[in-house]
Image (cartoon, rainbow, N blue to C red; front, side, top):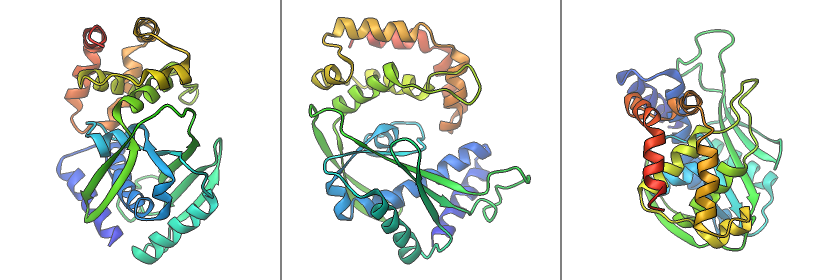
Length: 275
């Protein structure tokens, strides 16, 4: 059943003439729903608040793909037990016996590995990646200043309720990531994630105001004036070509995202003035 559903994603991607990278991200999104269905149909769902870009897409209709599942703990959970339970779920409920998993890296991220890309016709060279990865990152909630929301999900035959942060809290989380995320793309000069800047534009365009109490906890910023100044400093430094590097594989409509990138300075300044 799982393999059949993933094959249908690949067939649809071929029909649309999508790139291999986009197809892989669409496959990841399908597996995200399987994973979320387990978490929020179990007791783990009572202990985890959904956050990050995938939360924005699944719960609030953000119009870009997202690669990872991010959660903050309401109560501590046993990551090894969750990993074992997810393996049992995919093997027993979905008859996908080949799944592998490990916990590694900073914050003990859970990596679910599906060695299925060859079967899906997405391995063309010996150097091509053969496993589809889903990363699940669970962090300690860095601030007690937050509000939550509940979203019913009915898709891919699943029906479950997701507990997440509300939009103002998610916006505060995103601004904190944009201002303070330490990251570098391989050996390149790219030191920011273009998706953070796109998501900021999305929040502003949708009239969301950040949870300022949480933002102060996370960044020390206590006023809208200071926030606007800090954001403008970062925005003025970004290279549009670096935005494209991160965003191009997260949108099916390539012309749309290229137009956004070309007009990003105008658009972001337009909406920042209204924040």
